[in-house]
Length: 60
Figure (cartoon, rainbow, N blue to C red):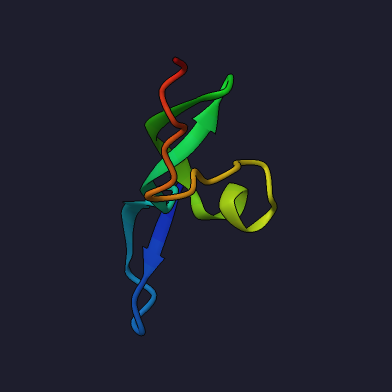
């Protein structure tokens, strides 16, 4: 989003609101991937974070 930063003297300068992106290990299609996710999606449960240190044993 974009808009204005407004000073106490009501001077307007252009500014930008950027999404709060975090680098997260997540499950995407059954595989673990590092993806950039906004914090709102993380809090809303739209992204399933991958568990650390739990590898599946190799099939014999």
